[in-house]
Image 1 (cartoon, rainbow, N blue to C red):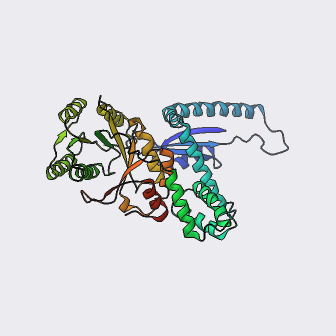
Image 2 (cartoon, rainbow, N blue to C red):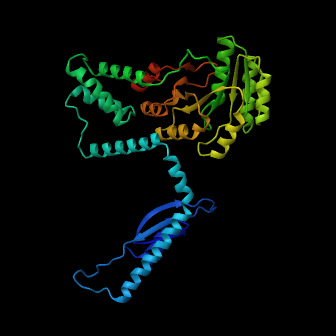
Length: 390
């Protein structure tokens, strides 16, 4: 096989060069945008098979042809080596991500799920149970966004109860599965001593500042606790002003701490407070450099509870990406936001099962101090099965 790498402005230019260099039978192996190219240049890798058996039945491989083949082989090896060298850092990052066995198994499970979908399309419905009710439950779960693997396991658990007559109809079967989901989810252990300092982290636009304001009002007004607010988010002036407004209305102090020393000093100033809530700047899950800087800023001698905020409007893949990238904070709990904007959340069962962290709160609107409630596994199970989002 002969492999060549091209840097081109668009796919049309690539096709023209590939046909000229490698012939009409060449194929494109990969294409991607080049980082830092400014003008949106593309890297295209193409290849063609070397035909060693031209004119079958005739031995027409002359010395010259053999030399050409060996030359092509050498050239293809050079191109391949160049390609691997240029992409070494990207390959290194991918292998690092795959290091964690749990997430590698996740990828394999998703591949298996895709294969099941493929067979369903072909009409090979391997997951049919032979029972009308359990088939209906299975496809009901799939329609809610639950993975085929989890839907099938759930149906397997109630199938015998249908056969014995213990479950009368589909709705009763779904209620049983709702209970199974609730029992499988991690929960907040309220018997453990609450930490005074609570830090809120998460990507841009997930609703950290609004959630912080809601919880400030909850602790100060409902629980009658003394509360201190700290924000390390000086990147968005509007966010600081918004928190200042909330703090003034609720009647609690706010300190701005952009640096690590400021953060430590703010914690000392609030030593007399029952609860200290900390807002942080939103970061993309791909912004590893600034995530590490934020993690360094938050380190102190005082133990704190870290809460990762995840939007329910995100996809399964986005949720898992956020959960994976923010692991450097060793977060304790999850807060689910924007439940009022979600249509179906069946995939949440898969996500929470893989994250293995309890959900403490669910937000379902912009109203402060309302539109937030404490989460329980049973509440989340109702959301997954019954679309109980409000």
